[in-house]
Image 1 (cartoon, rainbow, N blue to C red):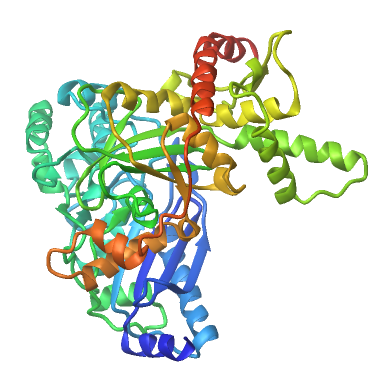
Image 2 (image 1 turned 90 degrees about the horizontal axis):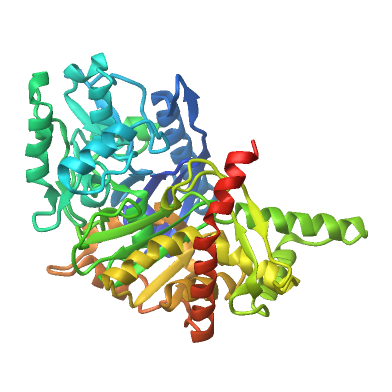
Amino acid sequence: MGYDVKTALETGKTVLGIEFGSTRIKAVLIDENNTPIASGSHDWENRYENGVWTYSLEDIWTGLQDAYTNLVADVKRQYGIVLKKIGAIGFSAMMHGYMVFDEKDELLVPFRTWRNNITGPAAEKLTEVFGYHIPQRWSIAHLYQSILNKEEHVGKIHTLLTLAGYIHWKMTGRKVLGVGEASGMFPIDIGTKDFNARMIAQFDELIAEKNYGWKLRDILPEVLVAGQDAGTLTAEGAKLLDVSGNLEAGVPLCPPEGDAGTGMVATNSVAERTGNVSAGTSVFAMIVMEKELQKVYDAIDLVTTPTGNLVAMVHCNNCTSDLNAWVGLFREFAESFGMKVEMNDLFGTLYNKALEGDADCGGLLAYNYFSGEDITGFTEGRPMFVRTPESKFNLANFMRVHLFTSLGALKTGLDIFREEGVQVDRVTGHGGLFKTKGVGQSILAAAMNTPVSVMETAGEGGAWGIALLAAYMLYKKDGETLDTYLQDRVFGGNTGTCVEPKPEDVAGFDEFIKRYTAGLPIERAAVANLK
């Protein structure tokens, strides 16, 4: 293997993927078999400045350069080679947010990330005007809120981009976005795989009296789909990425994508009727749709795959934090008796105990709301556990109810799919909830009444996902779709370990969710009275 990898490195038969997550920038280099051969990363944190969550331009560039430098060092350490040639590169980043530049390419206001909930009036008005759900974190909501706020910079806007689009622009000189990333800026027309022309005209009309001197289409980037050429690394871009100056320019780049799109690729969930659920501190489900939803729902965001297929997304703020807190309490209990317990063993034992509980958790109820939850209408949360004197209170049911409630808000959103008749054949789970083999899977399978798979490779994450998109652009055959490329050449038919829903668990979760919905006023009372 070592010799083959060395040859690949020397001849540029490698592909680089770099993803900007909210706490880490990760770089992954893959070979012709799509296998990671080296990696590097850089930890970073957003700052809260003047009421805005942001990262400075300096944070962005020093972080990127450090992640790449660490990858180069990994290549040198493993293979004794100085990295100079790369076959293709892809960049991705957390979606949404607001980066605006003037005609001299100067940043007009600090980067506003997806995390900012400061565009409520704008999101509400645009949803009404377009007849299409616009979440607060979308770029267009940030732009319109700046207009409503009468911010002085708006008249000077020449370019509006996301973080992934900004990096790509500086690398290639081209202002382009992959369609999945673009779908978090402004609604996409699934027919044209481009920004929705009707809604662009509606927006221009909405702000016509302002006479800004720009039309929306002029300031938005060009939209590309997976597999299209998105430009090449310029000499300036190569110097920005590799401070040592060793990297050769001229490398082709794939369209920059968002973390939702790269997550779909990394879990082989880009085909219609497939989906993925990411469950950690927060939880979100993404289902690739066969057709549009019949109504507009606040609980469901509509984005696309990197190929432009419609994806319905349910996003919840709370998932495993309360569950982890209870496991921490049990650890404290064990240590009080002088027992040293490994956290992995503790999680494994307690999670598996949940499988012994009553299907409906024996009448117990819990809410895992560390923070607010949009889907159920909460701006704040209070973690809470409630039972009646008749409830079956034992350890199995206690663990089961906390696993169930970690998906409670998600289930509320997912039930809309059931009403709409959305069909899902396969869902892939990834994230901390699925680390204990089979448990999180069986709970999610019960909540969705769908088979749930977990794959070993899902842990490679978004940097691997964007590397795969760059490899697809480089190696695809004529007419080979991304779905087929992933299925045949990357995953080789491997769908991971699959758990089928058990009818009694599905019925139990349905029973629990009735109790969960009926009990929401208890949670409201806790928020109102427990300050």
